[in-house]
Amino acid sequence: MINYILHKAETRGNADHGWLKTHHTFSFANYYDPERVHFGMLRVLNDDEVAGGMGFDMHPHDNMEIITIPLHGSLAHKDSMRNSSVITTGEIQVMSAGTGIYHSEFNADPQIPVKLLQIWIFPNKKNVEPRYDQIKLDKLEKRNTLTQILSPNKDDEGVWIYQDAWFHLGKFDNNFKTSYNLKKSGNGVYAFVIKGDFSINGNSLKERDGIGLSKVENISLQALSSDAEILIMEVPLN
Image (cartoon, rainbow, N blue to C red; front, side, top):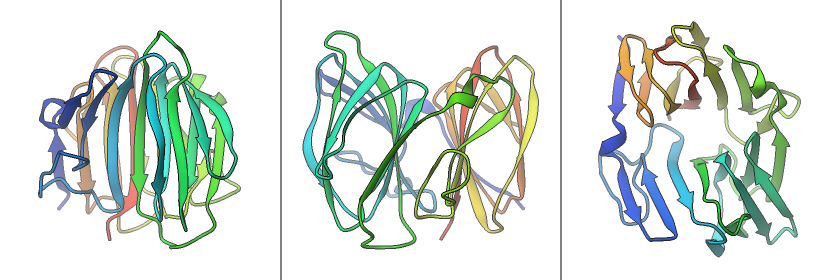
């Protein structure tokens, strides 16, 4: 029998620091819920809005796969690997923190807020050499399809990480139906609604709701509004 865990948008942890408005699907910073520490190898799903010109000063990470997806605006990145870049809507950034890195993230625009998802995945290899990558997701302009944006394979579409995980993004018209078949037996799926309304395996989800499904081989999706957008994250459960 398929197992479900539903996280409604309003039940997430949240904080308003003035320059940063953030929502945490899983325990993070001052938000802790013992029932919501992680979903398998998915450790962090943060939904951030950073004011113009503001951001996070240099801070450390290690042994974590860190994925950043801008939803609106642009983010300036610098790190201890001497990378300096701006990531914008329609792109995805990944860092394998490995043995340890420092990085900073600032809104690249002095006035317009940047909205982004930052996701942390536990790696399947520890103490690797840190690395950075950033790509433009050209195929996201195609509607009514799930576009792969992340995988464990260097030669596949999207960025790659040290974990048997696959991410797909999709933008759908109202009432469009599709399905997602898991890539690896025993994995689970966490679906996060970026925009609009969806039905997932018969469960109704609204904007910023999330649902984790385990003991599943495929999931069915139906958009229940126009311009509906969703992120599908397949991850190992243990």
